[in-house]
Every structure is written in structure tokens, then in C-alpha cells.
Image (cartoon, rainbow, N blue to C red; front, top):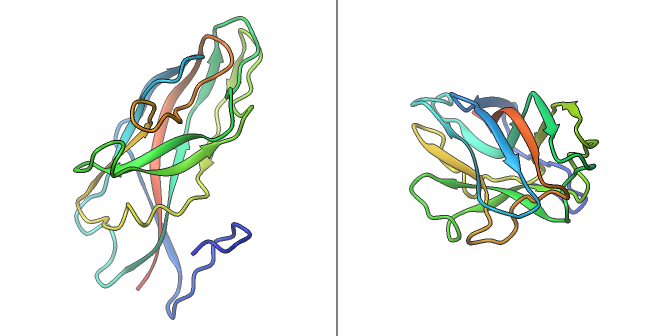
Length: 176
């Protein structure tokens, strides 16, 4: 549970554990422009018996990791507005109906100088997506910055900001 101050609070009788599941194949590159559009990230596929028998999921958080980011516009670049999101849904669901926000990007995030290359990083979402990621036994989840149905996809201030070697993953907190 997330309390009113945004801190994760988990109450249970067993010891808290977590286990990460990453995408099998990273996205080689993903370019963001100053026009918002759907941008698909790699799916996360859980194998059968991912958690031990009897495990109860307490919380799930999306993780996004990339190796480097490159601006090719010649101008300083960053996220262009507040509340730009990355969403998640079960593979059997529909975008615009069954997806939920997993990460909200801040205005000015991913700041990169014009024609510069910056190191990558990892973002762990602060939204518990357990409401959508409620089954981690042989299930697939899709991840996208969604413009078509939701209107809150990532857009940047200049023409092109590209992320390279992008991994997506889900961190599952559970108890047995």
C-alpha cells in the first residue's frame, strides 16, 4: 500500500521478499520527438512458477533502464510537459481501456545538451501497479507511452532524443 506521503507500506505476517523479472530482449533504440506518439517498450513475460507456491503479491513496480541517451536535434532537449507517462497492461487487454499509469515523467526529465550523449540510468516507478499486474504465473505484460487513447505520451522539447538498449522490468514484492 502507498501511504499519503507516497511511501510504500506493506503490512503482513511473513517476511517481505522481492523478485525482478526483466524483458527477454531490450529495445535497441527508441526515439522521442517533439510530437507525442505511441512508443512501445519491450514486453515483460513471467515464466510459470515465477513465485514460490503460496506467495501473495504485496506490490509491483515498473522499472525502465537504458544504456545511453543521445540528442541529435542540436538543441537542449528534455521531457516537454508535466505528467507524461509510461503505462502497462496485460497482453490480453486493450490500450485505452485496460492500461494503467506505471511511471509519470517530470517536466524537464531526461535533460540532454544539444548534440550530446549522456549516460543512461534506471527509473523505478512510484506507482504500485498490482491492480493490473495481479498474476505473475506465465503472463505477459505490455508497456507503452500511449498517445492514441490516453493523450499523455512522452514528448520532448526538440526534434529527437533517442534512448539506447532499453530494458523494462517488473519488481514484485511478495510474502509467503
